[in-house]
Length: 269
Image 1 (cartoon, helix red, strand yellow):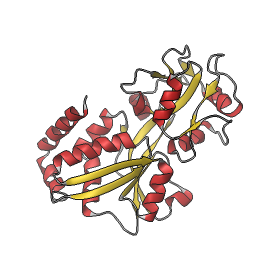
Image 2: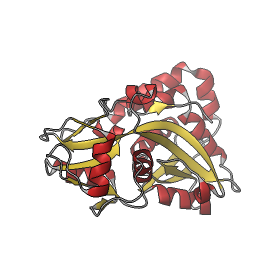
Image 3: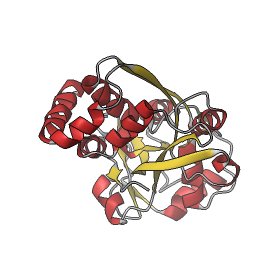
């Protein structure tokens, strides 16, 4: 569905929820700005949510930037943005000074070019390629990874049990991963599950015999998954406008956008 269609659908859903619309309209109708930065995986979903919210709140501007999960965390910690975005668990020093809210669960898709003959991989095969450079089924001989600021990379390595990856290209965005993988039949990479939607240059590989779908992520059958989080500076708190936008994310209209984008809806923590 094109973005305009999504916004119309969301508006219709909101209209049916008159009480909810009234609650949302209480804040933000006089304008204001929300600044958001962080994960390039969360960014497309956040942009859809922001567009739908702005369509219902005249005068409100939501700026959705990227930079990676590390940037989102540090910007939330120092208060330079209203919300940070991260596609990983927030623990240890990363959690210092911020409050984290999970907005969805997302799968990590292992991808290859459409012409690659490999359709399914195992955890051991992926581990051996990324750690030791061992070819997968004699076909996939190379891999690309995300750079060190990527929450997707951290989640991928945690799930795969990888401490240090072999020397390989480390890319700054999932668009760059897709471009590199699509260019050769012998390369594998990993991206957010939503990146598969509408992309005819790559394919998602089955992992341990399970297809990378939102339904399989929700059921737990597909085990390559991680949280989509937003964070704000605990000492500063959220402005009324930002809090209203977060409420919108957890509304029925927000949930519809999350599902359409290929992620799994979660209850507010």
